[in-house]
Image (cartoon, rainbow, N blue to C red; front, side):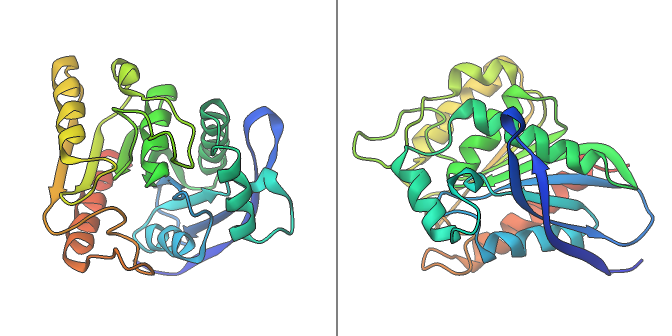
Length: 247
């Protein structure tokens, strides 16, 4: 066993051939490993998200986070890219699917890849994880407090998105959902609606709603961080991917 890793910025080919900046990390050992596509939250492609990518590499996965806002200009700060993307209503669903597919292809092309791919996303990335899992053939998906899967955003919300629950029949893999009891987007009631629909469809899923936690409880650099929920949540993430992405 070794915890040595490589990490750095790479380029991947996204939707319609667009070149995207991405941050990748992988273990340096020769054992076969699964891959994880990390979908960043609405605030964008930031240092905290890159730390998540490195954490997956430290646990034996090759991981990559494509900058979904790359089209807002090379050399533009991540904050400015995110602001520009939000002004447009966020990332179109079709574009997101193509970008995740490109990131997954990058991981599958790495030496020692075992061919299995997981996707995990936070905030808007949680919704996009569900979208990707209903649109692509992947092996495991983790939705961390993804809103607007069941209902549409409020009229004044800086995101243009349609509910995805009608796509649930297309879910291609087991789904782990991690949510906060104090969250409003999604609310615990919305989580229950999604769980009931997946039950009806016979789709494998495992949902956890953490008490005393709201939206963004994994975000160590934000006031919403809740250590107890985050620590337990990470245990569930690594256990879930360990079961579904092993060689």
